[in-house]
Length: 181
Length: 343
Ligand code: SF4
Ligand code: SF4
Image (tube, rainbow over all chains, first blue to last red):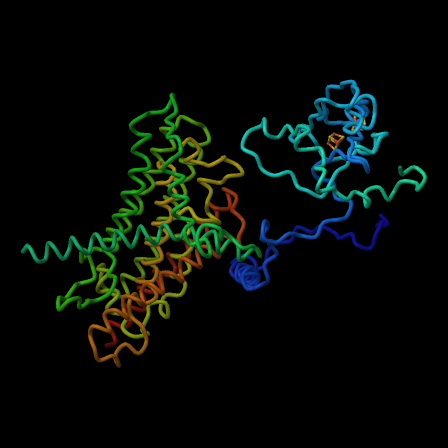
């Protein structure tokens, strides 16, 4: 039969020669190989102290963005929750009352917004689904917690603080310029 | 027996036991470090500088874990298993000559706990009793994987003990004594037995690997087939005892290999050292350097070779090692006979 590639090899079940049967040369060869690795440079990165560079579009912990005037952008439309394949997002909507215009951008807002970080697979579909550019994934790695409850991130952990805004412009770069608000 | 001798022996027993336990503890650390280095990793390096406190952290963890005894197990035997394993492992150190004599505070210390004239038989005896710990523990767990592990351990030990014994007989015939002290003393300077018994050494070394249940002969534990083998059901310090006994066995095996084939405490150029105090310490250090080297080789082999299949293991033991050991024995016998007739 014509071989499909030139890499194919014929399998032969030949008797082992005497040298092969006493194993020792092969064992010594293997041990030389492992010993050479003993002195090689280690591949390990000492994690908390040293970190590997990550891509600009790395998908880590979420952030709920505020707009330029510091108002929460999310309008509790629920599209992110629908898009989420892991069903990690839940929210409770509320209506904006008079006097709250400086807090919430839209007339409806999320009173409770929770993401279960244990369910989340960091696919970024919530970010893609959001019509208000409210939710983004950042390069922050979700820290370790000791109970399951602590992994359900509420608005206290998700909404970006007013005094330290998080730059997500790199994640918006794929959008058309006119779509950016 | 006068009281000075009694005190000397008690001190020696405690010191040797302490050293044995310390080395076994730090073997776990060495194992992890060597494994890591051979695989281009760092190994434990968080507890203390270079992770030097790691064994203590591990031991602490072992102590504070929940100690489970399965409901369907044979309770007393289940508890006895690790005890026997540990006991037999600790007993073997008694017959090994750790040096000739040591002068401490103007007192001469003989560096052997018990100079039994059948020392090597004593060690072989205790090593083969070690399998009872594994067998009893595995059987008493009432778990099929443990039982498999126990069965494998016993058949493996029985098969490899034969070849081991036969390779030792060659050494015994050559040296004409069963006493480890004598055997060590005869290998003065660099007149080591390895030059006369290279084949015997290879056979003995292979069997020692198998007796210690070390890879590539770790079929009794064999994680990928038997979960944990004979200690599947064990937890807490009982598991710790089994693991610990394995490391002690490794240490003792290295000591026996060093004594039987690599001159024990002898080193080339030992005749030129005048001071007997210095000589005593140097001999002690030499023996331990050799032991550490063999422990390293044990670990090196573990992280190089894949595990044997069970039939391959039996094939190697019965069809290769035993015939080789017999041939080795016959050749040695012939040479010894020729020598004794011609001189
Ligand atoms: S990143 Fe994916 S899984 Fe996580 S919350 Fe968003 S949509 Fe759900
Ligand atoms: S984050 Fe975006 S998609 Fe989700 S509810 Fe708020 S506005 Fe809607």
